[in-house]
Image (cartoon, rainbow, N blue to C red; front, side, top):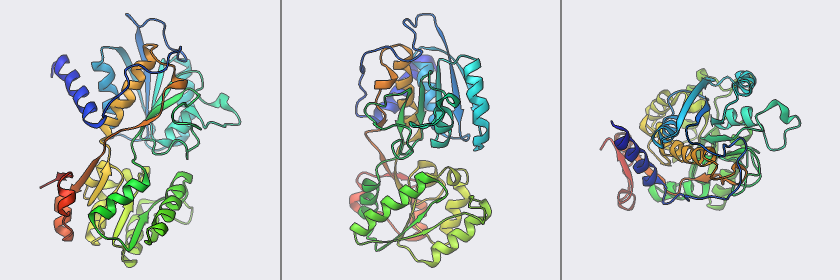
Length: 345
């Protein structure tokens, strides 16, 4: 693919999901932003939670095809947050121009929370742009999405829970809703609690199961017992939120759920493609491209990161895995078929 076609592809993919992106944000000098970018080679650290997420590809492709001269330094933590302090030090030593982070845990480990007791342990003087952070407010990364007021911004990949619940109900009537989650994580407890409130208001019973062992840490050996417990509760539908641990085992988790005839509503695209029934999702490539756009504006000095809003994509795809629907005999109703993206039809 030549440069022009690649650029058109990235822009087209981004525009398919984003109704519009402001081409000029608030004025002001960004932290560490150059006053002139002509001839400048930028060094960007790409710090990821795990491999295989298309958001990172979308981020890097956008910047490459935007014409910026970029050196990407990629660091994969493979889910090990203990590696992050050394990466923070490496970012400082190599004087990165910008840092891209994937996932809430990685972003918190690199940029720190808004109210860190010792902010010197984190990157505070270099722009940090994230993707795949579901709720920056609940994670205490920022206090305000419209104006982060710190060296952090990014793109959210999760649609709000009220909208997700309405999407579930558009597909099928629900009296008992299951949720699989990791209660050792604060953000996941908040997802559970919010869904509990929403379900109660909709007169839906919420039941839960998790993969924690005796040490209160998720374990792959606990996935099958977790699903067995959930199947015994006989839910009409099971919600699978964006959990990093689940993302690492999507194929196994979704196939085992299908064996137990558990219909799933998934918060991320990869799990639907792995056998989940359906979900209202943002394609990760597009999320990364939106983060790449924000990084471009910051690097070119067109916007100050402190005033660059954290945004969710304006359009999501209602995806339905048709082979899974057939296996469960749960076909989408006509009103869903009118707008759903069908996989494996």
